[in-house]
Image (tube, rainbow, N blue to C red):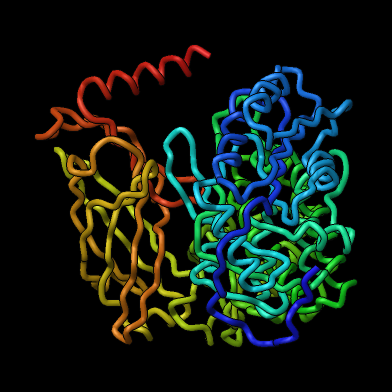
Amino acid sequence: MLPDSPAQSENTQTPQSTPRTGAVGVVVIGYNDRAHVADAVRSALAQGPSVAEVVAVDDRSTDGSADSLDRLAADDGRLRVIRRDVNSGGCGTPRNTGIDAVTAPYVMFLDSDDLLPPGAVDALLAAAEGAGASVASGLCVRRELPSGREQPWQESLYAAHSVLARPGQRPRLVHDTLCVNKLYRTDFLREHGIRFPEGRFLYEDFVFTARVLAAGPRVALVPDRVYVWHVRRAAERLSLSLDRGHIDNWEARTRACALAYDILLTAGQKELARAARAKFLDHDVRMYARELGLRDPEYRRAWWTHTREYLGRYDAADWEQDPATPGRLLGRLLLESPEPRDLPRLRDLAARPGRLLPPYARTPDGTPVWSADLPQVSLAPFLASPVETLPLALDAELRPRAGTGTLTLRLHELYGRVAEAGPRELEVRWESRDDARVRGRATAALAPAGPDLWSAEPPVDIGALGAGVWDLRLTVRFANGARREVTAAARAGAGRLRRRAVPGLRHGVLLVQPYATHSGALALRVATGLRGLFRILRGRLRRLRR
């Protein structure tokens, strides 16, 4: 094992070297995924001579996956297939089987329904060997299927080449809980006894990553795309991480987060442990809170009770760090209220970026608070926060007309901070849900529209947007030079979100439906032409028949 450098400063340039031939083993795990596992293995073999071996661990599949892998192995001697005798029920055990089987100096992990993009192994191997690092990590992209839309995962960590003498130099590393976008020195894992939890343990990579960080390795970060994470929300069998509709999923997630925290704290990594607790509030709680409105009352009560019990373990220092962030505000609200409450407002605050909708209550002495009946949740930190970090609230209404529409946007005051900064204008853009392309850019002036309110009405060329689902993205610009990226809550009621057919010059007819996303933001569905109209109507009829 190469010793980690004693240097305490972070280097922003990673020394590069020519990747070594036959240095990497890729562990591919799968269970009943015959449709995809061969593509995953091929993407690993296609990495070139740096890959010495691909170890495919089949977790007792019954769909012929292992036979398919055997046929691939007959054509490439680097592929070894290991058939487990008993299904483990999770991802950790087969990965541990792969760790034990690998003979190469470095190891990577790949799931059967994902891919390694070309050059991924070489980028990570060159960074690790050039920096003498035990771990090299790169950019993962989440690819939504079938649309193909890609979203970078934890992109800010991978903005540039950098080398960390120890993980504590960048506490945000705890936000990247994935194990698959990383290259590890095999002997580093073995010497420190770093393994995955065995059996059916959901979110096993949270624990594995915590064990890696707790060992204090030298880490190299690269901006290269090194992993493609396929997200198939319409699949008959959802991945374990996407199947969030049952309370046991949340309980498993909190159990993994708690274990990760204990691992870091026991190893003396206090800064990383504190960052892990902050990440739980900012990421995990917000993600599940946005979905509470989709769940039944029994789930909501169980989720609320379990989360309150978990947050009861936090100490004062956990709450003092960045007290104005939406995650900490959500956590304080949960602790102070024994029953689920204010769910629409909670959902908006949990959005990204967060929105804090009225009413804006104060105590008799003028202190901002969550509400008149929950004054113990103070919002006083907002008074000292930069306006570009505040959970500014906008709401939106779209009124479709012949091929166009009028968008009414209203910006709400927030304890005097908005007026203090001087709202000037809104930059409006519509982003395609399918491929992230942007259309319909416009800029509109914000004008006073009553007490504590500003409004703008930019036009929308719906026909120019075309067919698809479009998310509304906004930027508020202030007189003091500040900017704030925001989304707008969809105004409901009085038929505002009704589907309408309107004439259009380009397509003859447009079927237009403004709607609220799971986080409450305004979005727009558009179908073009008679064919698009009939397709939507057929789909609706099929749903009604069910």
